[in-house]
Amino acid sequence: MSEDFKVQVENRLNDLFHEEEESTDDLKSLGDHPLKGLKAMLLSVEWEISDDSMEGLINELKTLEDFYQNDKFILNFLRLLHPIAKYIKARKGESHPRATGLLNSVYNSLERVALSKDMKRKEKEAILLRELEKFKKLKEDVIRRREEKIEAPVVQAPLTEPGGLTSPGQFAAAVEELKELIREEFRALREEVRGWRDSR
Amino acid sequence: MAIVNLKKGEVQAKIVYYGPGRGGKTTNLEYIYRKFHDRIKTEMVTIKTHGDRTLFFDFLPIEIGKIKGFDVRIQLYTVPGQVKYDATRRLVLRGADGIVFVADSLVVRRKENMLSLKNLADNLATYKKSLADVPIVLQYNKRDLEDEGIPLLSLEALEKDLNSRLRAPSFGASAQKGPNVVQTMKKIIVMTMDSLRRNLM
Image (cartoon, rainbow over all chains, first blue to last red; front, side, top):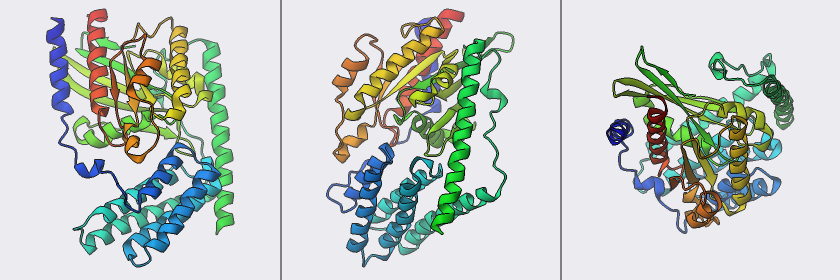
């Protein structure tokens, strides 16, 4: 009975979460490619945003910009990464939540373009434009937020399931923790707005 | 705690992804959501701070479908990994029917892994439970970084540090790229459902 039940669960999960063969592109190592250093720097930023890691990233970008002077597409991707890296270096943990994600997104697109031998010019342009749009959107969001009335994150009803809160002491501790988080968010937003104003 | 509605023929179970900050808990859920969004037909809820950290938790409900005549729904949660958010972590952990402990394979994160596992045991103890009472799967994440020349703990070292007493199923994985993310989830769902069947049905 037990084995029968487990088999039924496993079969249902196998049907639902069947994975197609992974593209080998996703797992391809960069080997000795010139972008290898940049990828390593981005991984260290993913781990920790510090002066050292950001300085390393920006220096690597400068080196690559020289290296790729004659490759317009790669150069444009690198030039897109540069201001994002500078912004994150300035704001660090208080930078916009999407900034580090955009850094990775632009890099992934850059890697795709750089490693592909058969990609057509139009496709490269489309990829670059998509990243540029994301960059513009992020910049607009940050600027707009300074003009809007800042609202605290709202915790929706499902977040506190009935009976989900335990003793009054634990509940009070969690509320205090959330209050402090919200205060931190406000502080971070104010700093962020100041940072963008200064950088313009 | 699981909700079993015999009248309606519904089962709902809660699985919590636990582990140190920046270990890849959210990335696990994001991978699942990105990859199977069309099939699971639900939305992922995520609340992040400045700097891309989990503020409260991430939440991904999954409709599994009918098993033994019951409509099964799984709720995947992550806890905030940062040490200072312990009260929040404890609340999210409450009523967990299964746990995935996402450890960071980086050598420099060895201590954080062990502290986080101890924190998990401590927080379960507040609910009068131990690690042995709840189905658990260990995931050793970020194995892909080996290709980048970043020093990683060996799987054997991770097993010795974290799993020598537990003897739980474990997977080396890469939440960024996908290997063993789905396998981890499948394993914990099977274990959780089996545990619920034994305890409740």
